Length: 363
Ligand SMILES: Cc1ncc(COP(=O)(O)O)c(C=O)c1O
Image (cartoon, rainbow, N blue to C red; front, side):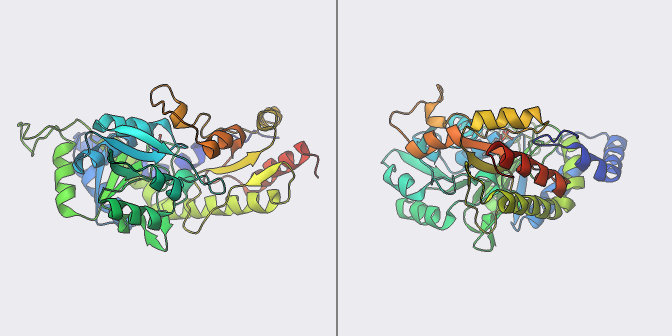
């Protein structure tokens, strides 16, 4: 029996190789590697594919968060985000000059809890940054209301949620700032670091173009304090080849998720994480009793798993926040991400589920 890694880029690279090779040939012929035609074309294509008006390519998802906050005027004070997310959510907030503060999660969905977030808003809170964790939209309607009530900006960390929709609408319909990562394993990734911002506001887009390029306006003058955060032409060659497949790949992820749901729903020792409409299934996460032993047993069968994430952010030395966030603290002891990627065979997902059922003593 072959191995089943938790994630795997090879099939996706094979399936798109003609397109990215053609893009690379064009790029090498032009030999213009920064802020060129591939990026300009990708920005138009990415915004259109995700139902937003404008997109701006930046160096990575962390920078996308930083630049959204800076553009919103948030360079001090506190920004509230989820305790259960990649550390880079906090790193992006810190890079803007603000301090990340963390709210607990809903134990059913593992998404940031809007009620807990509301209870933590103080006079120091300058912005809200909910995360659409594992590809699933958080309760955006509630966050929009909260942000309006407190007259603070809403930045969406959509690093894991390319193509996700809330209430049938694209994420860009809910706030001016939506930040994406193109880290290789994301639903839309490149082959290195990359990130993007989607906004429906033309003036905001224009400011991002200056901000990401050192404050330059197509000249050699730093008109304002910018950063160097540009999405490379090389990476756009891959992103443009992958983007037409995004919906199909997301649908495949959805089919695999449905198989895991079906196979594991009744399995003792396993609790499924509740998902809502509009998820793009970036990761398939279950809560498992004796989680570490389960992982070892799966590894012995050649099945890879991962933990997203092992420590909630309020307990990271860099972000330490006093007080307990009990749902996030409990979740990190139980969560495990099962194999999931475009082109993963349905029979492989069933084999993974079968091994899990066996571990818990079920056929
Ligand atoms: C939820 C979340 N936010 C932010 C980031 C940061 O993205 P990047 O790694 O592209 O900087 C990531 C990915 O690492 C992420 O998963």
